[in-house]
Image 1 (cartoon, protein in one colour):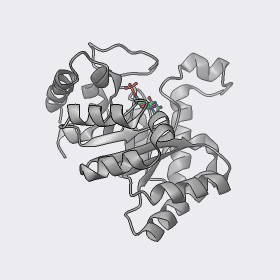
Image 2 (cartoon, helix red, strand yellow):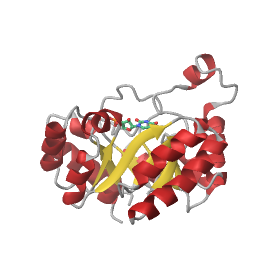
Image 3 (cartoon, rainbow, N blue to C red):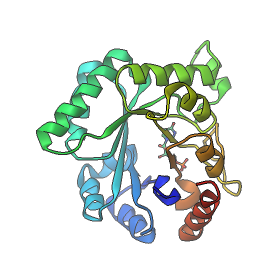
Image 4 (cartoon, rainbow, N blue to C red):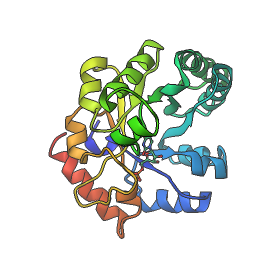
Length: 239
Ligand SMILES: O=c1ccn([C@@H]2O[C@H](COP(=O)(O)O)[C@@H](O)[C@H]2O)c(=O)[nH]1
């Protein structure tokens, strides 16, 4: 896989028209992420649009509910034939196990390949201070992220979502087969926005990420194609 194929670009737009415009503006992007805003607005129609263009799909719905409910949602989502699907690790061990089984059932019923199910460890918009003082978690953030990843791995998930700042530690502990997907990636020239635990694309890849989720540095750039090219050039130096 070349460096370009390791970048996932989020379609964080309000409607199908804006989504298609963005997909057509960036024909080089092979892996798109559909998140809460767009899926809530369009439903599965956007997945069909991406499939008709032979794109890979990360369906980032971040399920977080009781085991029976996340299992139902995972069965339905797996039936769409997407490549990656998310659940919050903090849904708990039983929910993670139920979700793992449900993606297999849902995909088999629909006759498609099951998605890789990956767990959100700690949102990249959360700082160490917020974890301690707002969420009252009495562990250091990297340690907590690792505990969440290990629980997900024990429950049978395929990987985790973590910030680039924790990816090296998770890679060491979870091994090379465990998928690690990093949002919160920022080239030196980009605004951080609400991302609190960033590294650059090359640093994130060198630290052990399988995939980088890079949104606004590309999609909100004055020239998205140029921003994409700059990121690919940076990654080519490490890949
Ligand atoms: O911990 C997480 C989990 C998911 N995300 C998602 O990734 C993208 C990041 O977009 P940027 O514009 O590059 O900030 C976005 O869709 C989030 O929902 C995350 O940022 N952190």
